[in-house]
Amino acid sequence: MRKCYFDHVATNPLHPEVLNAMMPYFNEDFGNPLSVYDLGMRARDAIEKARTEVASLINAKPSTIVFTASGAEANNFALRGIAIAKQSQGKHVIVSKVEHHSILNSARFLEKSGFTVTYLPVDKHGIVDPDVIKNSITKETILISVAHASSEIGSIEPIKEIAVIAKERNIIFHTDAVATTGNIPVDVKELGVDLLSMAAHQFYGPKGAGALYVREGLRIVPLIYGGIQEGGRRAGTENVPAIVGMGKAAELAKNEMGDRMQHCRKLRDRIVESVLKIPNVYLTGHPANNLNKRLPHHASFVVEFIEGEAMLLMLAMKGIYAASGSACSSRALKSSPVLLSLGIPSALAQGSIVFSLGMDNTEEDVDYFINEFPQIINRLREMSPFAKGWGEAGEGEKCYTG
Amino acid sequence: MKFVHDVKADLTADIVYMMCPMHLLKLDEMIKRLEKGQVLEILTDYDGALEDIPQWCEKTGNEFIGMDEDEDYYKFYVRKTVQ
Image (cartoon, rainbow over the protein chains, first blue to last red):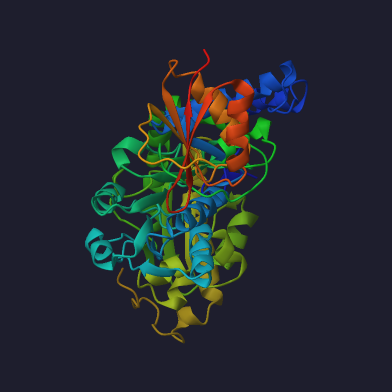
């Protein structure tokens, strides 16, 4: 049976060249980067090379990159680290409602620790309105965090505009760029952000490697205390193979980005076109096929009358791997807070499904998918009481107008 | 401890919130960038620096000018007196 991996926002396979680059650091070059002898020095040099490659991917100086163990750690580090460092100036933080759990739960932790948090609403495409941010800012605001793009709905946020607003008011601005870094151009100077989170496994690097860009001269309180790794900002013996892998993946992503985007976008467009032909299926996130508005490898939908998990299982039986929104909500069988914040009714949000393409996918994969998916929806709808008019809306009747 | 105010520094090392012993490593690194007679300013919130930095000066023969306090961190001033 054909295997179609359409869940690249969950994680990506490791690029073979990345694995090759990592191998020596599992074997002969196992030294601790802080050791003074040659083994340590080789590990240290490898980390510094990776730092240069990751910095180059986002147009930053190497000294501004702090390696972490994940994108989630980078997000936690940014929110807590800046909030604590700046608390003498104010205790108000702004985040959007379509953030990843690593931002939302960090924000909740800050609330419990005496900070006030504003959760920004979004429009029906999941986009934050810069004017709403302006109105949410108070004299106490010290930090704003808005994701570059949501991996659940693929919409890209107006980061540049928000950065200007934050800068004018001397507020620190962080963006969670885990979904974008290595997939679309990310340039910290152009975006104007103070901090930016990324994760290696989102661009064919290994799991267990992430990084936080911290603008030069910005003070941040560490999340993990210990030794002087990462310039005294993040303790713990470095995961040398993973960091080396992240560096190699960054180098490859930079060189191949144009081709990868074009490849994925073509396949994605075919998926969107075919899926929207099925009755009572709606695109979620921004409808524009435009790099400023939507991730080029991302297609997300809500399918009326049936449930996302059921679709996932039936797709998996056909060798097609997809997601029903964020991994966390999916496992908890909870309506996605991101979809609810777009104004999608709770019942319809249950029918959420996300396809994300990668360079390993082919036209044949998409042909196979286009043939199988409508059949799966039909079979599930035949079983669904809601499709027979027992629900809020009858068959063929629209309960959501997108 | 000698307290000083409005010392003009030629170079500043901002290591506020960075972990110990970054203050000593930064001292070693930054002092190399200065000419003899120039002044290095170190900003840190680490209490151990109150002992470590004057001791480092004694050990290396550089002049410890003194310290100042900001709201939530210390400022130390060191003059490079040895090449």
